[in-house]
Image (cartoon, rainbow, N blue to C red; front, side, top):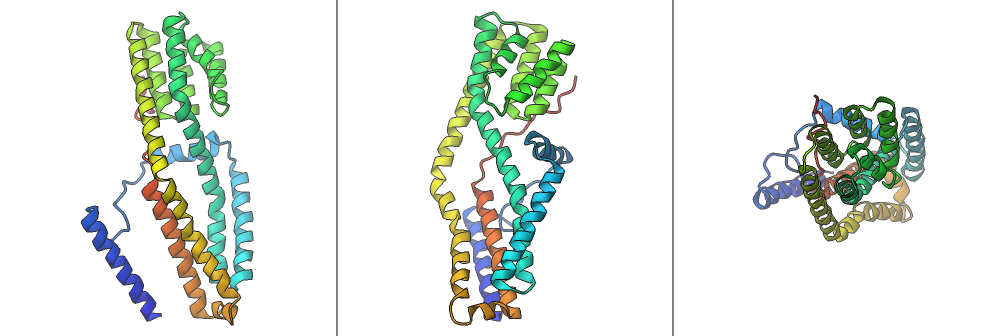
Length: 296
């Protein structure tokens, strides 16, 4: 046990020295410090999880409890004792939350890929075809991806009832919760209020910017394909070795000893830390909603 702790300390010290030299990271944390989320960011995350993805609190809680119980039973069947089933239950409880976040990220990816086309259609309809800005926006909304159409439909109903374009765009921005949508709505609102010929140039520049951002993200994702595949080995290899150990000699009884129970939990924690850390390193930066709080 002492040898294992010394090996872990030596490995972590080597990591700290390497990252300090190669990346300039300082401190004792595994990676560079990240600014804590503001209350607005936390509120936006909760809204995106519970409303944008149509996740209900009761459904999420039920899924968390069910998967935690199933994972705990599986952990007990494999390793026995108390600590491994508890760690398995914690991992199982995190699966529904991770799945909800994954659905939200996929929705953002769909919106990111669709906005260049939507912006170009709004520009053509508003400047070339002579549509009013609200009419161009809602016509384009009908051809938006399925995940975005409910937001456009709700905004269109608000426009028909109130004819208040500013209020309509505020509703659309809240429902889409997307940085590009914020920029498009702000541009359209200014053009609707003051008019002018700059809306064509502004929308064209915004379209070009979104196209460049999308191409850059696709290039980065393609370069990370091999690393993302290798990331799966942080779970597959240790779990496979543990399952093989169950069938060799007195492997199962060894897992049932206090030392075996502790080492199983340490191994699970290290696996989870490596998985999360690798995902954090490979995560592409997301756009911030700098116009989300604009109030007139």
